[in-house]
Each structure stands twice: as C-alpha cells, then as structure tokens.
Length: 127
Image (cartoon, rainbow, N blue to C red; front, side):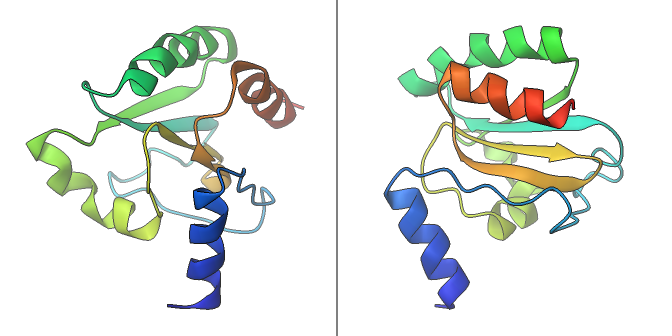
C-alpha cells in the first residue's frame, strides 16, 4: 500500500476531513463532462443507512440554496457497475460520504460533514 493510500485510509478511519486544495487535482468524471463547470456534489449512500437518510434532506436543502449539481450513488443497488472506476479512484470506507468538485477539480472528499461544516465548504467555493 502506498504512503498516500495509507494516509488517506488512516484519516478516514479517524473520521477527519480530507480537503484538497482546489487546484491540486483534476478529475474527469466517467459520465463525460458532468464536472466540467460549476459545483458538483457526489453523495454516496444507501436506502438502508440511517445516516444517509438523515443527510439527504440537508443535501437537497443546500442544493436549492447553492444551485449545485447533485449526483447520488446508491451503493446498495446493482447498477453500481457504471460507477466502479470512480469508486476505485476514491476511497469510500463508509457511508454517507461526499465528494465536492468545482470546475472539474476535487475540493473535498470524505465523510458527510455536519450541516455547519457543509455550509462553510460551499461558502468557500462560492467566493
């Protein structure tokens, strides 16, 4: 295991935020072009997950307020095959997890933050 993968895994296990500077990494999302402009939030969850069900209304509320594109990946469904390359690229050890992109660059990837932290992340992107 590389040092980077080990560090990411350790941070996730400790439930810490993993924040990348906005210009550090560019990622082209598998369904071509979805992340090229604006803010996109990718939410990973499952219908059976209480934390995911609790996070859903918060994400939808902020989507209306900040007008970002939302992609929900239900990890309990069989159609996960279309997302396998993306899931392999980003370590997703628990749900709910979110990734926030701006103009195709990753800004945040980690456990779903508290509502206050989520608002702060989105406010920083809209500056």
